[in-house]
Image 1: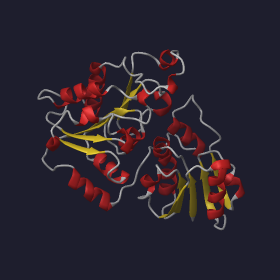
Image 2: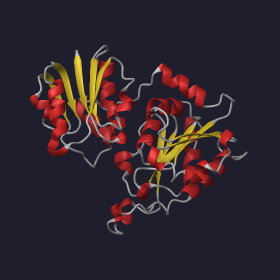
Image 3: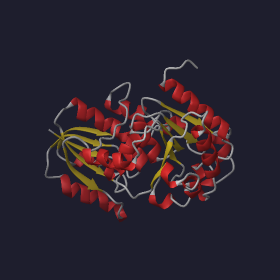
Image 4: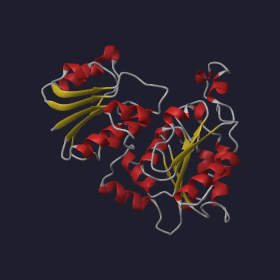
Length: 320
């Protein structure tokens, strides 16, 4: 039995789409899986059970990437074809069952929409499968010193949804304080290779021995294995935020010019906190998408700290 799973170019959307993949992997044990997705997202699928192949689909002119995909899979018979990019490809390939997402529904969270697509409610939670070598590497990167592990994602692919770095520094200090949420915790700072400079104030706020920094210099599944060892993740709306939620750890997402109703972190213990300004108020300013200036200034540190405290209290079963 074979599954062709066509999913997003973007890391965050690809992580959310694993809720669908998880359903088929768990419903049909032993199903052989081929994943087609963008190059950035491809590494997160390398641990999928019974994976046969990952087909990377960098965009090409005049839809050439779709033509190349068709040529590479047309000679196979697929019991299930899932196309979450809404192309016509699923209808011109030999297969028994076709599941095609027609477009995004902004009235629903993306995972809820995907659950409805496959007829499963509540929708399965996203899941990223790691490999033993990733877990072994994470053990090397994270000190085994008995301290808690605080993970932060202080960057994003667009400056508009990035909380100011100095506020991350303040938040980290409060969480790591002797009377804080995770006293003297080791810090894991993660981001994309191009985002390291933006995160430099956060990185430099702690001594080297008190932090582990990963900005594209480790495999994404190693990053996932590190996140799975974390006690709390706080970060901007990004693919790494969704990875943290899929890792099953307490995950707090920070939102301003993006919609938490559609893209809030989705996992067993997650929460989001947004700017004092609403999504609509932020976008009234005009075409802010042209700018990389932060639109998160109206989110105070105290509000994020309180949300993190409430999230950890939920994990520990405390009454709020």
